[in-house]
Image (cartoon, rainbow, N blue to C red; front, side, top):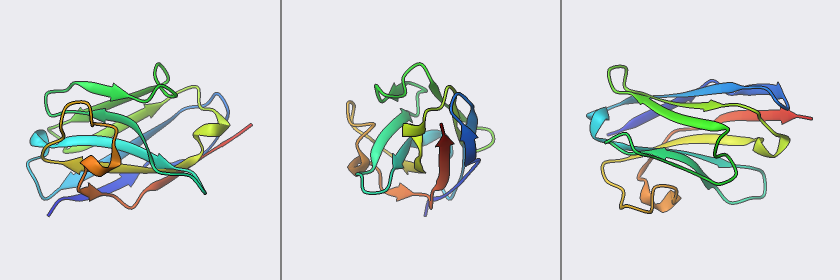
Length: 125
């Protein structure tokens, strides 16, 4: 059973930065496809960034060039570096994992079978 625990959320002013972490256990981490999703109140959960087991990455257009997803296979940890944060980035951020995600579907929430509990990010103007 894959277990995911996010951390690193908080409150920042617009233009600031945060780094989210997701600790993974219960599976050979290096073999997992990993994703970051977010959900704002009253909105659907949306894909933000993803990284495949081979290290290839995908980003939502709204965060491209501001967010960077990375993974440390030695530490079984996924990261999301968020720079130039905007108030519209405010949401609960979730880490997701799956042993296999089809090409082109890395930012689709239905592609992932395992989810963390989330960490809140609040960006004030």
